[in-house]
Image (cartoon, rainbow, N blue to C red; front, side):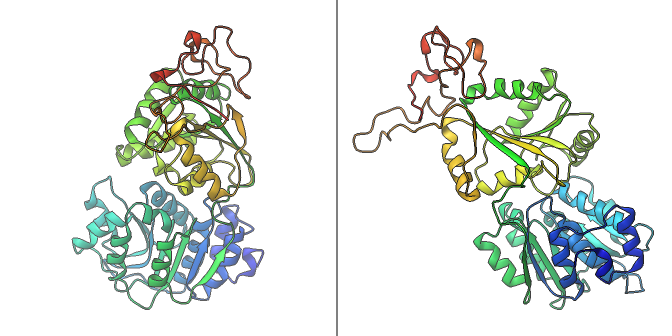
Length: 444
């Protein structure tokens, strides 16, 4: 199957696909849709940005178009579960686009907004309901929804639902669904616990894998800067200044840290906004809308934005802090080089992040090219026989840099350049080569 027109789809749906400019299916769509149309359960493994929403949305809509009747009150025909509000919003928008000019109703229930209007909207019956697990449980607990006649279940980005601790919530939801249903599960990775979910939810599924886990998009240019933690902000400002008119995503670990970073960047003259778990749903939606429209150029985020979001023309993704989970790196950099376009993924690695970098490179089965500095080398463990005090180079609280820095903390790119004649280090340009924390460092 190489074209939608050969899949036996309803004419109205084919016309809608053409109106949306979707003439040829992506690999995951070409392989998943025919099996799904035949009623088979599907286990799809593919990275974000490969067109998974249409891979399950098209066969769902095609089969529901044959019903010829409206869903009963307080029921749904198809349930799509997504791990984050942003992804659920995006899925719902795509499905609404595919069902435009049809009587089909696509509903959305997510946290962060009032629950009562959501209950009112689904009271008359919904063809496809897109939901985050937590908010769906809230609605089910109120007795406002009956899943007993749900014919279709889709779990999108299922591995992230595991990461976010939704396993027990998913089991509770599954117990309320009929045994006779079609289930599709899509995931970017296949951790061990995913086998439990697949075995519990799917019956004799067709397994489709179009992109090996841990593989980045072909057109992503990756690089890593080995840099002291205290120098990350200066380098980020310098790099962002080189492409002020292009969209950039900056990822970090904590909500507080990313909010603080956004405010610093905004004060420095960069049009920036932030999305993270402490933001209300309205704030997150406004930030994403401004980023998509180009009103802001820098979006600072925690991993809440790493999965599934289709943000057009993101040219640069910065891993300001490396993620603790290696797969999260792949999802982060998947926000660029989408739909065949080019993109750059730039990582900052401080001394205490070397283990994270090694884990990322192991998962990706590659070595990320070095843009500046040299790989940090840990000093001997003071607890080990013959060990010396000192820990990792420069200490775990920010560490010194390498020779090649400029006074005032400005760091040269492309390997460091010439050292300062006064011995200023990259750890803040302190004369005489003094290191932050008073500890020496080594680099290899």
